[in-house]
Image (cartoon, rainbow, N blue to C red; front, side):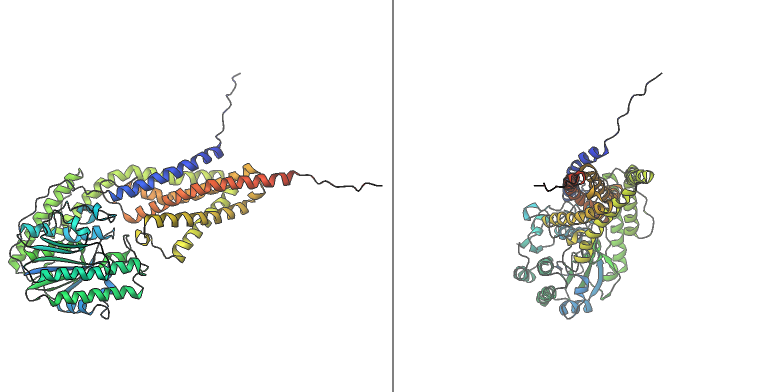
Length: 565
């Protein structure tokens, strides 16, 4: 007779207890790793030496003056009571609603405007640099470099980051400030007005006080926002007064918008719609269909007679420009050659065969082929990630379904209470968005998540423990109930984490992420960290309460008999 070897049962309580702090540590390193990867992201074309094409011929204007009003929302730009000078330029010139892509920070926005390439390709810093010493110089061809090759004289007045970004672009004169308020803008304009009397042919003027009002003075719904926009409009009037719009061209635009409570950087629609107004020589007046931010650089290249920046993903807005049909045909041929070179370089950089462009429009067909090439590699990487994420998402729920333990329903109810309390504050009280725009800084974000998740976890724990009557249990059972509740919360948080993993991978590598799923995943990882840490404390508190209750349950009633005399 063969004796069966006794099997050891898994001590799920001990395993869950050990995994709790380990998962908190893992969440910390994962979150910080994602942040570092995004901040240090480099374009696949960072090391590519894309040769610029030929100049596009004679300029259409004596000079181009770009007035970049930082953070100016599209709706604010249309308010004639706030910005009458801009409205006059819009009436006399060409205007369109401009759209951009996340991240809606200034550094990637400025780079997109001047290179004509989206952040995934233009090699900008996706997150704004922490200071002027950390600014990355352009590695991709840009409008100022193109103007320099064409022999044009250029100047920039604005925030200090421009000095570092355009360090190798051949800028002839510059005035840079670390100020962001009205006083700084006045100094910027004063420096630029002197250049308008000279022979500079490309001038960038950056006004920053609207963005300052959004961050520090209550946001776009505060009266100080409109006041800042009105002051910028006055400065715009001073600039235009020094121009001869029969010979000169002024371009007014923005790099991003801001959410109602102030802030930007995320993928909220209001942060990715900006004004574009072009008035003066070479411009055909009218109100035009929506355009993309990447269209700015090639359009201005035509105005200046410079080459289209080599990495440009946009098209010159020829419908806005006063060019002959023969000149337009030559420009479109130059665009086609530039787009073919870009597609070939990008496909080689990511190790793929370029998709074949289909369609008559050189830019639209080539950019569709570029995206198909990108998605081919992404699709190959996502196959195994999707399978792993789906398995990890379904398996715990399936195992719980098989066991059909009634107490699991109370643990799930407690986890749902956690979500309800957390998002009651996040959405209903604080009106936060599912993007980076609401976050004033990393320290504030950490404190917010720590406080909110701890309070929500406490509420869910109380709901689950009362439902299970766990406070009347012995220490081991009470601790087990609390531990089960915590893991139910972590399971629900794992769903957006797994979605982000399936779509974007563990971290950011050769392409920028899909920002909505990236935010949801990062947001859940940050919660996981504090839920696991605070959950460990709640397990200990539950055990302590069970230990306190236990002797009361086992005590016997002692009666005292009064002794007789």
